[in-house]
Structures are given as structure tokens and as C-alpha cells.
Image 1 (spheres, rainbow, N blue to C red):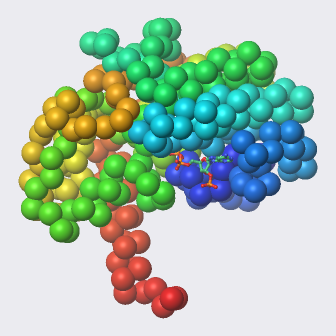
Image 2 (image 1 turned 60 degrees about the vertical axis):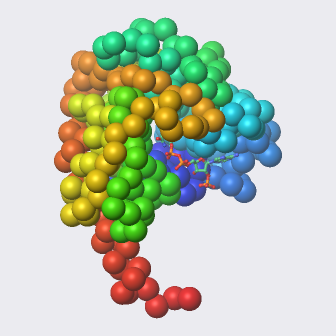
Length: 299
Ligand SMILES: NC(=O)c1ccc[n+]([C@@H]2O[C@H](COP(=O)([O-])OP(=O)(O)OC[C@H]3O[C@@H](n4cnc5c(N)ncnc54)[C@H](OP(=O)(O)O)[C@@H]3O)[C@@H](O)[C@H]2O)c1
């Protein structure tokens, strides 16, 4: 199975590459060969050259706050760029799995969001990703849209790594306690994607459409932070604060918990436990850091 994933160094790309083996080839295609903004017309040629069986459209503009100041760039990447990948998939007759976000919802619901709930994004990032979903669905006949949330891994930038970076210098940190979501390990998303690809490519598959893919169960940012420090053995006191006390450019949903019932029903995929996965990634990050401190001889 040849899986092509867009981007080079992103969290999900890196996590997919980590799962490659003799049966699963993962081709990462990113800038400069594939630039969602600068070279939309060469995307189809670049993908065709790699002859993939399936495309994972993971590259995105993910700076949620910065997007409020750069809406054109966010839409160029998350909407038009996503459509360019979907168009290439359609032209080449290849199925595409497009990655989207919980931030397409406004967070006003009290329970878990299902795929049939109506999106109403509160940020430029969320709106640009929703437009990407619409364009992908309109363009590629064989598409799956996977909405995920609160992604973390040893790679790139994420909340878990920020906490571990701040922890050693701080006795206490104020963290938002009234926004709830599903912290989700990129490694778990990657292994679920491989499972979904295998299913799609192994025969007749007709259940195209939107799916929610997150780890279970849920947490607030402050609960997650507390657990990260517990796993790391760092004595940092978390001061719970309300979102309105933490000024940020983008408005985030208070509740973006996603139901994974459909994913479980169609693909028999069980949600992983966020606490178990957080512990694994904290250990990985701390080991990487200690390798850097004691083992890195490059300058
Ligand atoms: N991070 C989250 O908390 C979160 C939550 C929900 C959904 N998602 C979605 O999950 C997917 C993967 O997220 P992630 O956390 O892995 O993202 P990430 O770590 O921020 O990486 C973004 C990727 O997009 C690529 N990219 C950005 N602009 C590009 C352009 N103009 N042309 C080509 N590639 C470009 C980057 O390229 P380089 O490799 O060159 O840097 C990088 O590989 C995204 O679709 C995101 O919207 C993420």
C-alpha cells in the first residue's frame, strides 16, 4: 500500500511516517514540490509522479490565532488548497482522506457532537476548514473527511510540548478550565488512518463521508495540563481560569467533544484512552529532550 500524505514536518505526517514498514509505504509530499498556495497547478503532476494508492490531505494552516489576521492565507491553504488536492485525487481516480477539525462547531451543544450536527465555526481557522470540507466533498467522489481535535505528538508544536517546556521554570501556570474537548494523540490518528486505508483498498467500500476520529474520553485544558505534569513528575500548580480571562485573538468552542460512534460502527475502531496516550507522549518528549541534552554532539 502506497500512502501519499501532504506536508513534510507536520505532526500527523511525522506520525504516519513513523508507521511505515515494508508493506506500508508512506510518501510525504510537501513544500517546495507541493505548495498548496504557490503551485496549485502542479499538484496533480507531483502526486501522479508518486503513483499512490490513496492520498491523506493533512497539510493545513493550523495557527488558530494568527488566522484571524491572515484570513486570505488560511482560506488559500485550508479551503482552496484542500480543493486542489481533492481535484488531483478525482482526476487520478484515487481516494482521498481529508483531515478536518472540531473547531467547525460553535461549542453551544451540551453533549457530544455527531457528524450530522450542523457546524457553525467561531474562528477564521474553523470557517476555512469547514469551507475545505465543503469543497473536498463537492470535488472528490471517493472522499473521507476525518474531523479530529487537540492533536499532540513528540513532533512540531502542541499544547503538551508547551506545558513540558514551561514546566521546569514555573511553580504555577494559569490554564483555561471551561473549554472541553478530546486530547488526541497523532500516533493514534495515524494508526486509525492506516486501518481505514486498508479497509478502503481491500475491496468494495461505499461509506464515504464525514467521520469523527478522536481519543476518548474528554478533558478541559486545565485537567489535561494537570495530568501532563503528573506524568512528567513536575510539581507545577495549575490555576484554573475562565477562557474570558485568557485573551486570545480567536474564539474557541466551549464544548467541542466529538462522538466516535460512527467510526466505531463502520470501521470497528475503538477510541483510545487520552490518559494512556498522554503518558506515552510525555515519556517520548522527555526522552527526546534528555537525548538532546546529553547525546547531541552536533552544533
Ligand atoms: N493540531 C491540532 O490540534 C489539530 C486539531 C484538529 C485538526 N487538525 C488538523 O489535522 C491536520 C494535521 O494537523 P497537524 O497538527 O499535523 O499540523 P501541523 O503540525 O501544524 O503541520 C501542518 C502541515 O501543513 C503543511 N503546510 C502548511 N502550509 C502549507 C502549504 N502552503 N503547502 C504545503 N504544505 C503546507 C506544513 O508543511 P511543512 O511540513 O513544510 O512545515 C505541515 O506539514 C490538519 O489538517 C489540521 O487542520 C489539527
